[in-house]
View (tube, rainbow, N blue to C red):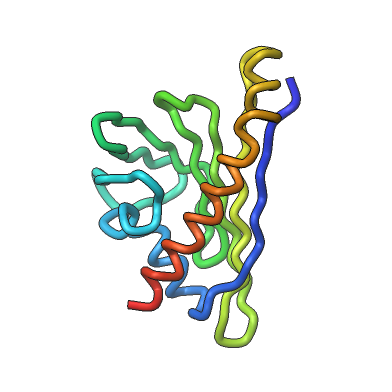
Length: 141
């Protein structure tokens, strides 16, 4: 089954180290991750680590699959949205950072693929835009 993917590329007015810290500090995640109400981590984030994320009453587990300071960060969801992967790539441009946010989902059936490809397309793009907007707000503080 072909993956369904959404990508957003934009820039934020902050150094790459600052953006990376905002993305990878569990206590700051609820401020930029849409719908997130809390994050529990057993230690510092690193490749292979798992952490628990709450979205209201729903709780899920993320496993970090990409972590290269200060350039890349990514996870795969192990809970309710099993198979969703989210990746961030940061590139320094002067005093700003170009950020690429990419979500990838491998559907489990043709019907799921059709739904994700055509019905959920706007929702996926809006989620990336909301992440970027929230992250810009976090960095402006």
